Length: 139
Ligand SMILES: CC(C)(COP(=O)(O)OP(=O)(O)OC[C@H]1O[C@@H](n2cnc3c(N)ncnc32)[C@H](O)[C@@H]1OP(=O)(O)O)[C@@H](O)C(=O)NCCC(=O)NCCS
Image (cartoon, rainbow, N blue to C red; front, side):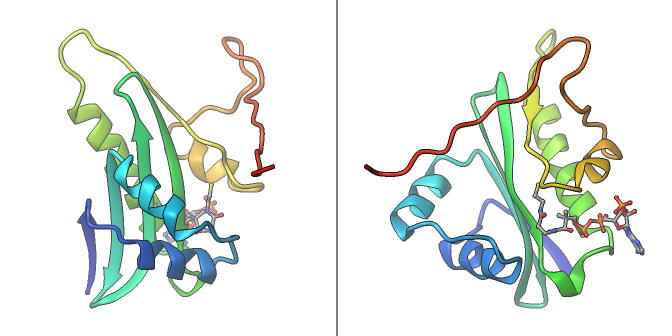
């Protein structure tokens, strides 16, 4: 049975899922720090097998969705959609009256339509220029 568990994502889960989707790895030190600074996480299990994850970081005004991944055998079954919906629900539930915020993310190449179907808008737009990023390595 597939279950969505909140805020118990572990280093080993991230490592296993990143490996399954062929994402490069981070050090355990970085993963532990990332988990400590995560405001909301989801790990999806089929029985006890870890099959998907998603993480939200942020400060209540600006949020970033990261590490959204479903292992290949379980893709295209609605799991990624449910993860994003649950993250949006978390953000919505943490706003008080008259408050607003935004959720940012960088779609993996080719996944833009997936996020658009969930309510995200591509940038640049009339309001915003391009998203920008910089990668930094230890010198
Ligand atoms: C991107 C990703 C998270 C999407 O997760 P997913 O669980 O496959 O997503 P969903 O099943 O909710 O939706 C994916 C597609 O399957 C379709 N789908 C959903 N349920 C379905 C079902 N039961 N039968 C057939 N298709 C279905 C959706 O309509 C959607 O269509 P689209 O490709 O036109 O958007 C997943 O493909 C993944 O982990 N990829 C590798 C890592 C990655 O790129 N992560 C994104 C980082 S930004």
